[in-house]
Every structure is written in structure tokens, then in C-alpha cells.
Length: 271
Image (cartoon, rainbow, N blue to C red; front, side):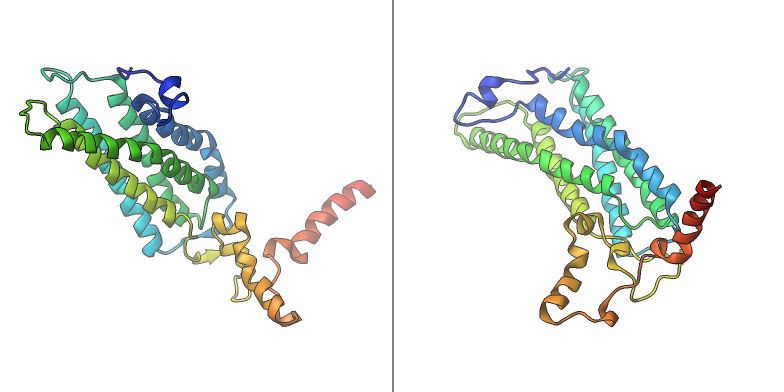
């Protein structure tokens, strides 16, 4: 499948200079985030269906996401094309299954994420946890390969700088080096962009005012770290809070929304 071992305990554990095998780095560490998103993408579809907002305008954030995601699609497609050109056929380099299926799996995942950008705009979804976790996992799990690529590049430079002539062709390895770091850069950018929530929707079931609770427009990262509450906590630390300092209730928690539901179930039990 790859031409090398998937896991080597001697190379990873029983050594003073641990490292993963190339097969493990280019399969498990890349496909795990992809598998995660395909398994949990149902939640993103649920957010679209359950959203009460509509039509987020195009802005710098979602345009940047679309462009960077498009860049990832291009670089992944190039990986597949270059693998078919540089390897297999008359080439001395063998074409392994992972050279084909790796880019295909990544391309399919990035395409799905790209499709969600206009869908989230249309249905007013400002942030999604599944996508943030995907980009976080992909970025973190790509770090080991950064080390591997840097070390391999240093070894190639030693060979090229040596006085001994060599006929070895490093064009494929050099392409992989450049391609991976472009890919890793785009991945880091997508992670940063997903730390922020998208703009305010133009249409909503409820009236959204200036005094609304910040949680409604907070990003997934802000929600899980309660960063959206920092302003209130800081204000309360400096001065006693007054009624005017408090945010409005979430519309879903207001009496006009809660009471009909309560009355419906109450009447059923009374009968």
C-alpha cells in the first residue's frame, strides 16, 4: 500500500530520536481528521436545519475561508496529478496506493468543507464545532511530518552539496517538500479563521439587538472557553453590576417562547 512499514516500534518508541514512519504520517495522521469529519458531519447538517437565521453577507472572513479552502483543493489535486506523472509507468519510482487514495480522500473532505461555506451563509450558521475540531486535528497531526520533511530536506542538501557527483533525481521529494508546507500553511490559516465567528445574519426569527448576549455570536472556541463572558466578568470585577449592565435573555429563553411549550405539556398532564 505504501512500500514501507505502517508502524515501527523501534523507530518510534525504543530510540533516543523517536519518529513516526512515513506511512503512518501520510495515512493515519491525515485520515484521522478526515474520518472524524465524515462521521460527525451530520451535526453540521443538523445546525443548518435547526438554524433560525438566514443570509450572512459575504465578508472578509468567509471569503478568506473560501479562498484558502480552494487553495487546499488545488494543491491536493496537484498532488494526485504529480504522483501520476512522477511515479509509476516508465518512472523508476513505484506508484503506491496511498499516492492515489491519499489525495482523493483529502480532496473529498476539503470539497465537503468548501460546500458548507455557502450553505452556512445561506442558513445563518456563524460557527460550527465540527469544522473547528477538524482543522485543529489536521494542524496538530501534521506537525510530526513537518519535522520529517525538514530532516529529509537537510539530508538532500548534504548530498547535493557534497563534492561527489550523483545522478539521483530528487524532483519528487522536492515537490513533496514544497507541497506539504504549502498545505500545512493553508491548514494553519484555516484553523485561525475558524477561531472566529462569521458575521451577523441579515434575517432572523428573533429581533437581535445591541444588548443581546454575546454567546449568540460567539465562535465555537469562544463558547468552549467562555471567552464571550470575559467582558461581563471584568466589568463585575471593577464595579458592582447593575441591571443596565446585564444582557438580554436569549430569545429562545424568553417567556413568550417558553410558556407555550410549558402550557402544552402542563395541560396534557392535568387532563
